[in-house]
Amino acid sequence: MESQVRIFSGNATRYLAEKIATAYGTSLGNVNVIRFSDGEIQVSFEESVRGQSVFLIQSTFPPAENLMELLLMIDAAKRASAKEIIAVIPYFGYARQDRKDQPRVAIGAKLVADMLAVAGATRVMTMDLHADQIQGFFNVPVDHLYGSSIFMPYIQSLHLPNLTMAAPDMGGSKRANSYAKYLKCEIVICYKQRTKANIVDHITAIGEIEGRDIMLVDDLVDTGGTLCKAADMMMERGASSVRAICTHPLLSGKAYENIEKSKMTELIVTDTIPLKPESSKIRAVSVADLFAKVIRSVHSYESISSNFIV
Image 1 (tube, rainbow, N blue to C red):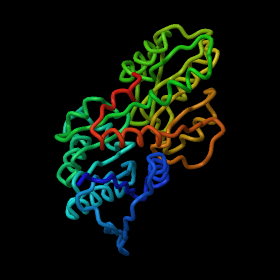
Image 2: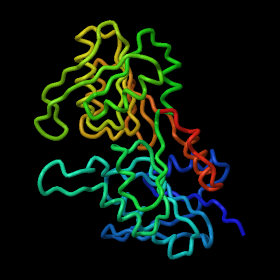
Image 3: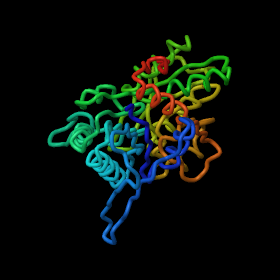
Image 4: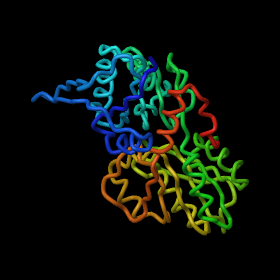
């Protein structure tokens, strides 16, 4: 008997999981998450998943309970004899810890990958990892989706006369270059110096800025410090406008305040992480249709490469 697709959600990403399930043409399965008085989490499926293809949707942004909840859901599905357990992680947390960039630090991304596999995940689906090589941390198949398939049509709809893609730091140059090649436009690369984590001391840029409509591109925006400094610097150097596209809106600390005060025209993000207060400068586009389409392809063993633009 062919396995059926069952879609479940953790608490942190239920708002998105409901949209994905609707786009797929089904409803979310019933999973119960209980918290004891001391904060301990207990997960139970309230319906049979025996022999089924189970897709568990949960982004793993802070707090760490979101990751723990996903691990418990995976373990519960494994012990309930699910045929396949696919962890759908729109935002893969701890991805910034992908290497030993200083002595005696953990490689958090590898640790999380190992935990997911040990818990029982047979496949992982995610979007815009902080570094592509994180896929190699897993010993199970990884479907790595790209926000470009959502952002590209939006950028083209703006009809900016002098579009120039920009990387907010050296690490994002490959991503910005991919956009620039597809859109056949120029590229600018920023160079930043940090005094410590989340605090940018100085930023400059390589490339033509004056009279250009700049589109900064990054995988995530945390405090917004780098994006806002880059936007302000580019406007001071004569840019016609500065916008930014970032897949994952962490937006911690004074991010909303920083963005509102900046000279950036607009920040376009996805709903892989829920937005908190509304901002006149922040626009969210949904990844639900894309994930629903890929879930369908994965279940039917079809190629997903047609969903990749760059």
